[in-house]
Image 1 (cartoon, rainbow, N blue to C red):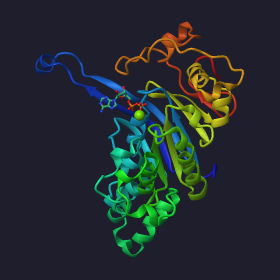
Image 2: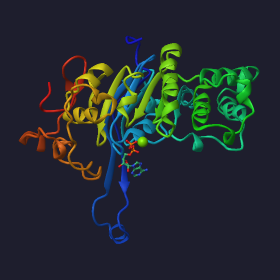
Image 3: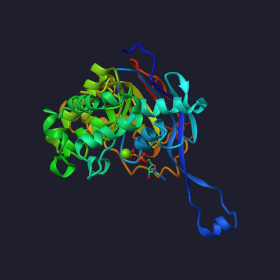
Image 4: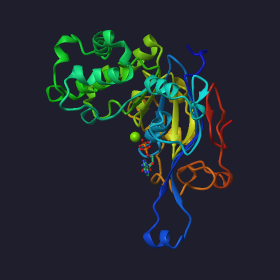
Length: 331
Ligand SMILES: Nc1ncnc2c1ncn2[C@@H]1O[C@H](COP(=O)(O)OP(=O)(O)O)[C@@H](O)[C@H]1O
Ligand SMILES: [Mg+2]
């Protein structure tokens, strides 16, 4: 598994949103265009059979990363390689279509992602009909298999239900069935359990682990909640203000984070706190991604800040074990 070539490789990805200037400034051509630097030079790869966790406080750019990797947003810079081929270099519509089918997403809110007028069968059939039109004879079986894999068993009892007849957890399983029905090889799961009742979360998260292990899918699991990552992620990336500050094997990141931000975030996660680890407080608020601090972007909140941190931006470098961290104190 871990030696397989990456399904998705992201290199120096950037997604900047231009900020609208005031009316007079834009008419008079005054001032420079400013940007929300939602994703600012992010690199990572996901291999088949692997769940990569992407964690960080709300607003740090996780969803923008997930959407941009899937080309649901146009990247401002950087490259996305699918099976080693740069998506920007693909001119053939058929190959782009192949990517659209092979890379799917599960969103946070199942109430919004399903059509209330569709039965479960119709909802799951829709992407199959659009993306696998030439396999009509298999459509019925594909719907059933997807529902079974998503844990909606017995399948018969769910096929003809409407969204209002199901719980949030069941709806999210339908949304998951929709995403996997076309047999993708890469899946982005963006906070897939954060709107659900705590009691159903583990069951749904286990599905993603199973898809990676049994179907060899590569999964990018996005969450602000690190305590959900321990059991399902092989590796974890910690994101802060649009950039990955630490990335490596899940056990190393959760057990012994090196970057001061990763340390604070992990110390604050409820399940992680059980040990003797000292609680590190995060001072201040997340800065605005329009005005990113000079030097290390975490420096205004860092308890270990040094003079260098205010002027030189640290890059990801090999740290202890197999991880990388972007901090002047590490490496
Ligand atoms: N369409 C957009 N236009 C302008 N800014 C945006 C847009 N989408 C997201 N942002 C901003 O980009 C930053 C990252 O957002 P997001 O990726 O949703 O973070 P997360 O998923 O980690 O909570 C936030 O500051 C957010 O306000
Ligand atoms: Mg988000």
